[in-house]
Image (cartoon, rainbow, N blue to C red; front, side, top):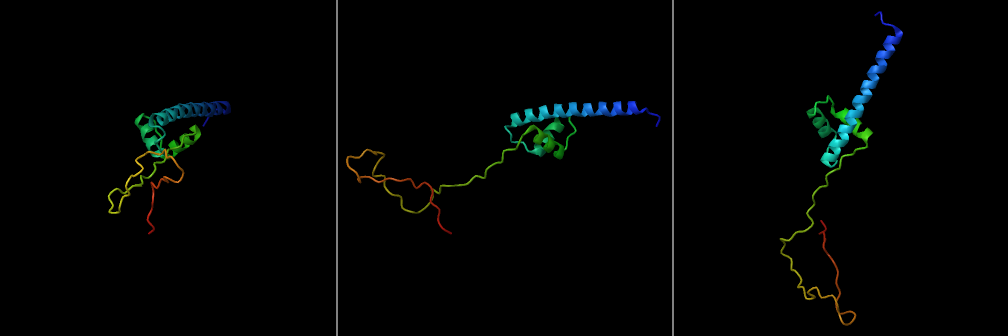
Length: 120
């Protein structure tokens, strides 16, 4: 190949520094996208947004960058219905009418039963 040993290692060292500069630039982009998306982007969305900005990054590389930047995707919680207002069960009257000051003990007993689940 007729390349000097020192010339080869100089070339290798230069390419490593370019990779480091690119990785640093990508880490800045990943952090900016995470802030912009309020940490809602996973590795797939992060990769697509980086590709849109012109970087050649796949999903696994985006995941590695996210790990190096300390970014985790927030998981969405499943919506759960806790109230069934359309039932045919009797509803107790509000005889206390939010007047919680009573003259004597044992005049009014109150509790909160906001969630009751029927056994299956």
